[in-house]
Image (cartoon, rainbow, N blue to C red):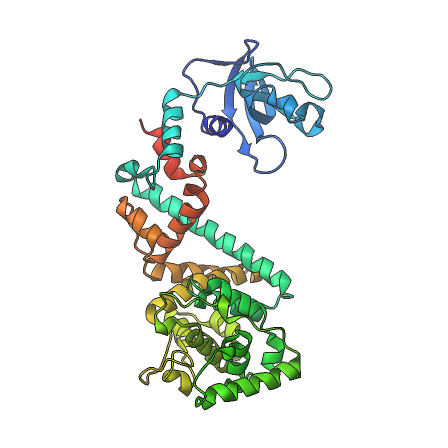
Length: 424
């Protein structure tokens, strides 16, 4: 109820007759103020006329007036700036810390708004506001998707920033960890991130010019060299021996357990062995991977760097037991697109913010708009509801919408939800 009152106040959905305080004073709302998402009154810098006198200050909203005392506002000086208390139920008067009476407004919520809000909250159909998509102006749809895209950029930039704090602002390490997670493509994402967090990068750097030793580091720390295999596989035995040497030399942390990796329903080309071999090849080949990616000016240049390959052994194997016909195992086009969307583009944006380089932020946006939309459950859901999804910018915006608004039933902050409530 209180969230709905916030919505009604913010958008000035008021009755046609003159608003009045509970004591009968006429109220004119010139500006409802700015919503406050932090501690303190709900709306800052509102402009009101109460009985002809202009007031500028803050507004507090409660479901019922007695919540003022229940929340301790009568003892909190930060609420002395409140010029109007807006309530759904007026069950008492409220006062500032010095005992002054605060004007109070009983704000009715229109029945149509309440009914449509309940529809949004209670329906099991997704998206619940689908019925308005056919009448929404393109400008409304585009502006909201653009805002959601920026919101998602900023959210991912904050995640990158937190990781940088953990790794002493080492961009190369954090980029590789994020890249590794996305090489798990959902199913093994957590396992890849856990693996990457236990890779001693400075130790690996000392052997980065030797692909075989990088493979030994990577596959050994992943626990995959402990698998039972054919005794005739000399490459596996050499990797085991090399990893034992590296373990002793660098006092490496305990490797992961094989049980942490998931293989069920995985295509052989997605086996962790192949993906780790591709990462090893990339880490060996691109000695300054992050810098190279940040300097690449086109999508084709980025994909060429990331497509990589593997050592010769992995051109004939999916793991240490399953062989394949000989072929170069590069990262496929669809996989590359996902890696660019989930790794490269967020880092371009985050690094652009870090360097105050608008060109990098703009490049992130351009790359996203140049890629085709992702094909997943969420994009199919919205597309089926009548919302066109053309580019990765659209699909990323809709993923943000689904995660941060729809799943949380936060329809009052959503522009589509606003339009649904507004239309009769």
